[in-house]
Image 1: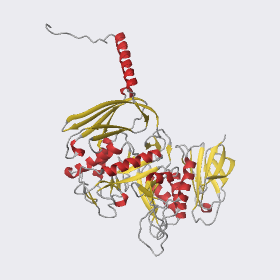
Image 2 (image 1 turned 90 degrees about the horizontal axis):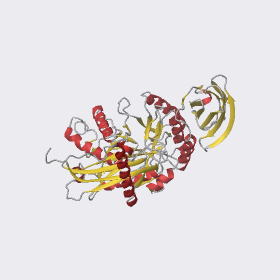
Image 3 (image 1 turned 135 degrees about the vertical axis):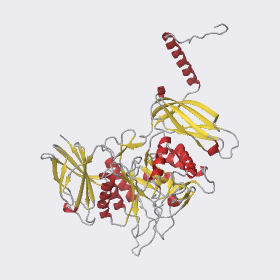
Length: 552
């Protein structure tokens, strides 16, 4: 056509295309030498920022922040929302899960128009931690880390934001003892691996962190509380904790409480999914929480001790959370909604007014009931109540072992800032577990015992239950078997008994382990007749465990 020029692609020829690619790669290499790309470990948290300096009435609402992270070689594009963090700064947090060179495209929009953008490349090299928790593909009741390591848990939830109560004095002998959060986590290092946090929306009930306040109002968030939680998550990562984050501290079973959205029993307002106007600020709040904390969280537990929220509200909001969460975290709520298709974990709470030797039988029955739904089971709160002291380390030890041997998990409400004595006359007080030095030592012994156990050990026949005042439990995959014995009639005498455990044919080495000391107290060898290994237990006062390994 007259007056027009036609352009032929320079690299249309395959040979020229290769040459162009090499030249372009060389240019990138030169640029990298001038400005080296930052390095982020796989499963580590990478943080990016964009600025927008303008006068805004409410920056939480008026600006939208969005990032797209492109995986190495363009294999995947992951959308992540950003969050306002004060001043003129919006931040983006991302956890890369593949090695190689990533690209981050960051964008701010106002009224649908782009107001700031940036692109940045970074290299994912090396590893940090084991990754997020996920459901095992081998055992439907177990959780594992992203790298496949089994997760056998001991969980804690303290009361405190910048610090937490630990090893406090006996009531009437001193005030509540609080330590800074890092010192608290150091005390539990190797003794616990799961940490639960409650967020408050206009309420501090149950030691919630008040992310929203009535003073700020809807669509605004308490940045001081948010940054303090940032610091907590950083420390939790440093000390190897997985985390549960609860967006809504509710407790509607127990009392009526006011929140920024309405009362915790308001099923006509914000807990009515058809009430679009009332639900919209709830969605905005969830967007902010997910944008800010998904990079640090393993499990979303939507509510704490809620019995008023309708099923349709939970189902729609669960779908909303999953649509925003770039990592597909596990999702649950409390009290348990085990039949809900969206619910990944069956949760329960228990505060015991029974002696230590009765806890194993009680929990085993509850775990059997909760496991009937075919999902992982976790107590997300456990402790004493009523007239009992909150210091009961043997009970806490029994609870942890009972949870493990029933393929389940245990987390303690651990307000250890003060020691409550027994009160036979009765008293009202906080239900909790005082996790002092003895309990932490028992937990370390347990975690050392289970550290190398495979995730495919499943319950097997161990007979006969109840004989010789011993309850017997066993998990096995044929190569390794774990045995747990508990003296259920009391802990002030000892007993022993015969063990019949289905291991399959072969010769085995039995190593007896004392949960109270963490020591191996004897080894022996035994050979099966057919599929059942028959041998005798040592004397058991409280409990005893064993690892049974096939030797040929």
